[in-house]
Amino acid sequence: MPSYVALLRGVNVGRITIRSADLAELFRSLGFAAVRTVLASGNVVFESDETDAAALTSRIEGALRDRFGYDAWIVLVTRDRLAQIVEAFPFDAEREGWHPYVLFASDAAHLAELAAHAPELDPAEEAVEPGEGVLYWQLNIAVGSTNTKLAKIVAKPRFKPTTTNRNLRTLRKLL
Image (cartoon, rainbow, N blue to C red):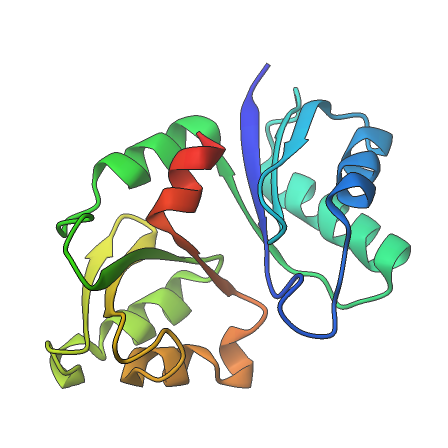
């Protein structure tokens, strides 16, 4: 049975608070197996014999909206795909004073638009590298994860329903 990872956008960082136990219960109620949540930031690992990722995404988003009453968006990847993404991280993930992130997007055009900003970024603050279906991103801790140029662009409302990012350490825990 295929293993998936659902990355929820905007959970437990603003006005949307969902307890991990409630999130896991929802995924079990949808008939998924081996459900586990990782950290309290909207990460769910589960198994399903469904193979239509678009239909699966839509079903999960609808269930989240119905159960928790918010405009839910997720990025869904298979566990195998997530392993490839983590393995391909192009920067030194252990670089002192820097945080390694992966930006996921469910809209390829939005991802390309964000990647196009790479030449404008200050290399003392952040670096990005396009990957297959993701944007690898490394941030200088001194600047802060919300103060960089790319962070401010990603925060624009048009990217809200299509993007989410995770620290590389979180992604390793998901695997």
